[in-house]
Amino acid sequence: MSAGGHPDTPPRVLIVEDSDTQALQLQLLLEKEGYATERVASAEAALDRMATAQPDLLVVDYHLPGMNGDELVRMVRLNSQSRALPVLMLTGGASRDLERHGLDSGASAYVPKSADRALLLGRLRALLRQRRPESGGVAGFRRAKLLLVSGAGDLDPFREMLTGEGYELRSMPDPAACMAAIAEEPIDCAIVDVDGDAFDGFALCRDLADKRAAGFEIVALGHPKAGGDLALQGFAAGADDVLAKTEEQETLAARVRAVVRRKFARDEEVRHAEHERQRETAIATAQAEAAGAEALSVANRELADANARLSETQAQLVQAAKMASLGELVAGIAHEINNPLAFILAHQATVQRLIGEIRTQTTGGAEAKLDRAIDRLGSMQQGLSRIQQLVVKLRRFSRLDEGDRVATDIPESIDAVVTLLAPKLPDAIVVERRYDAPATLVCSAALINQVVMNILSNAADVLPEGGRIAIATRVAGDRYEIVIGDSGPGVPEEARTRIFEPFYTTKDIGVGTGLGLAIAYGVVRSHGGEVRIGASPLGGAEFVVSVPMAAAAA
Figure: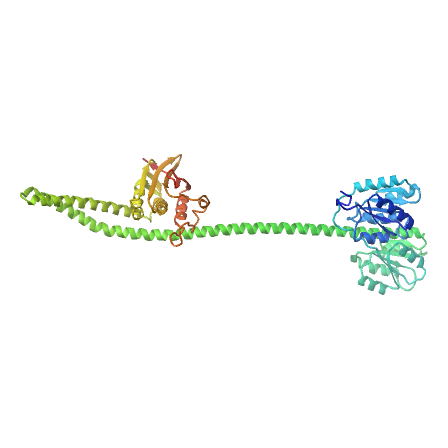
């Protein structure tokens, strides 16, 4: 992989060299080694270039027109996007002071132009090996914008010096023009000439200081005065630095560079703080969105659960109403049958007794007729007894208002349900019963009347051509279990997880409501129990109703 971070892209080297000859030689050398090079002739041009695309390595000549190489490096180090950029400093001299100045400014390494080319390439490769992966951003360099406010004409050398340093310089003749220029376009530094009678320079410094929120530096420039200390007056007026016109040009240039660096460093801090704020805002927004999504998901789940409970409750209400109506109907029929049945049974016994007495007193051919009448009365008594048993079972099934849990005779209750379902259980369906568990279980009547009845009814539905249904009771630990199996086709695996859902049915439209097993499941769950579905030894489905055995007796 190349130092530029892409396996097919050669490392990019930006050469900052004002000598055309030396720049060409260096480009040929590096391109021969496989590097992609670009050359600019000044530090200002380098900053402009780096504002749009950052190289993998910067080769800088120390001596440059305008801004020197060490000042360029300082600006590179001030920017967070280019702070780790490798910089190789070159110089035509061999002075140790130049090397020290270059390294102090932030250069990564220093090589004299007279050094062996192998040493230059070795340094360059070493620096590229230390290059961090690209951050994906550009440095965003720009030239510093300076405003010089002066009504005097003795500052031409100073202006030339600032322009030569690569600054964007605008000159204003008075405070009004200065304020208008600042309002029109942001600046980095305002340099105020405090000499002259055209305006009060210190007063202008104070006015500018009131606008310090705009973020520019203020420099007072003037001659040392006999009547007062220039520096004290300048700082008192709010200036960030005070320059004496009598100082050497190099000193003035260095002082201005220091002011500009300070301004750029502050701007970089502001950008970094804004970047951190945006990052924290983005994180907070993402966390809020995640929390909102989670809250929405929880709300949706709760709503789905509430809807499921509502559907189940509605199904239970519908089924309860149907069972209550059925119970009232059965109770009414049982009552209406029971009254004439009791009357018939009472008179049948009387008639049978009287005919028996007449039989003992009769001789001749009438004896045979009386014997047939006695036999018919016996048959009638058997039929009436079966009707009486059916009425008892109907009355027992109709006790739907018994919501409290009571000691219930399970075999007797199951037999009553089988009797009630007799129209759905033709002779082709054989019902086998085996009661191994204790007969009595503390439960509500609905456990048998609804649960067992629904499961038996479904088993009868899947055996239209006949078959076998097995009903058994057993004890498993502290659980009372009622097992109902059939020889039908069984329950498909994919339907087992949904078979207890309200309104879910595998029957044809109009045949089943999908409420029976849902109600049965709800009744069993209200007892603290469960319903398991498996394969029956008979070949079809097997339902195991398991509830805690609160109280049982043999």
